View 1 (cartoon, rainbow, N blue to C red):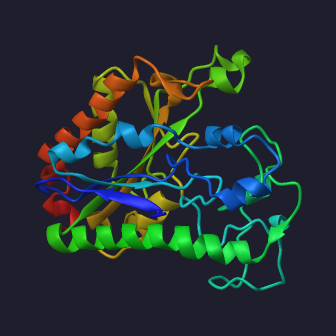
View 2: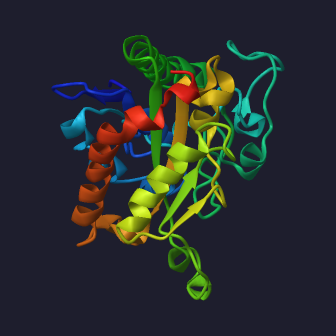
Length: 296
């Protein structure tokens, strides 16, 4: 199965790419034979329906990329060496692409590039997995996705002189996490720009103002400042800083779905229209946001 799909506009008028790394739901049969919990539980870890929320951005010159495999199988918004050594029977220093493991807090919690835990803390597997699974998942899913995304961004940069990666995600509402949290304020949208390192303040605030002008409450970087994609493809990792920008959008799921059934509700259409409108807005305004003062 192809791990991703790229969708392109009929008329590419900008170098904007909407990316959905966590909306895939496909879990291979051999994986399903190894797990010890209901596979439906695993879908709560992903960003179900986000791929459908962004599928009309091509109407206004933007492109898109969506992952098909579920996040719990391979999380492409992690570094390739964020591997939980507790999950596998593996000799030391045996990774094909990495000589050491990157033991981040996410890895320790069971949410590395391959999930050990479900969203509610259950162990996904009854025991350790074969070492061979690591390179299989990296070679067949992770690296093909990032190769495709890198090539797409590089082509945009070559053709247009810049690119903007918009990494689209969803977050559970406080009420879904714990009804006792419902009285706390939670933004409808958290914008992550790695604390202004992956995307300019001007562009970040423009996107935030677009959504707040249309009725959403917006915050920046807390509690989500951007994952691997934002940091890796954003300006802090590229020469000619402002030519290569990446930003993360984290929408509250209760805006568009029933969080218990993972089915869309009446809010889905309006949010999809709003995101499509962002594509239209940026198509009009991106030249000014990537100004000559920003090295273009």
